[in-house]
Length: 294
Image 1 (cartoon, rainbow, N blue to C red):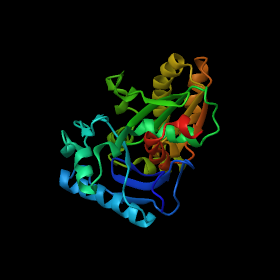
Image 2 (cartoon, rainbow, N blue to C red):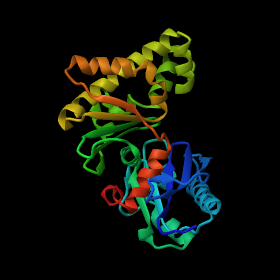
Image 3 (cartoon, rainbow, N blue to C red):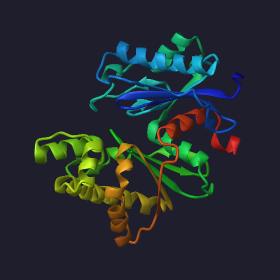
């Protein structure tokens, strides 16, 4: 395979890592090259990096090409320019704190440091969605990932930036503590003694469980409160949602939209088209800005 326009795109999640080859010219993943593996994000640095390296190697082998460029969609806090992990106090990947991931991988794959780039995962998610969507380049678009973390990003005229809304003060702590999977797990556990995951709570809501339905209503109200201020400030017209919680949108999104409408806010909501793949595509665009390929 010709490596000229090929990038190994990598999405690092809280419990997994996924990689695939991306063709920048076609703005798409190369079919059949996706590799996904579970990661113990509480493991040692050596254990975590061993899995990351294996996934990257497997992806390139499947695609029949050598590793020339790698683009990561990474959760923060992270020094994205220099490739140094600053993740601490978030119950995942803390063993990587202070480590130069870029140098570690460059040495492993025998490539130059500048051929390994890092991007905030929410930013990569939104850029990937905008790149494959039918949006006008002048539209102001917000993207939010609802999962193990609350990611936020803004895209306008081909430029996509992380917003870091999850770190803003909200209620007793920060927004991230109220709009993530751990909020559902902790709240449901506190109320029932059963610490279920979001998928299980969603199924319970489907079955009419009052506690599950109540939690989704509370989540909807929290989401509307956090989003409302940002939508007003940016004058966004489109909102794209991704992450595992978004898969249960039927239990919270109508209420969120209603609450926003009551405040005179009427954005158009969309669910991610590419799902997990959007962050992989969006990270690969670091090697070819959006305007260069549209």
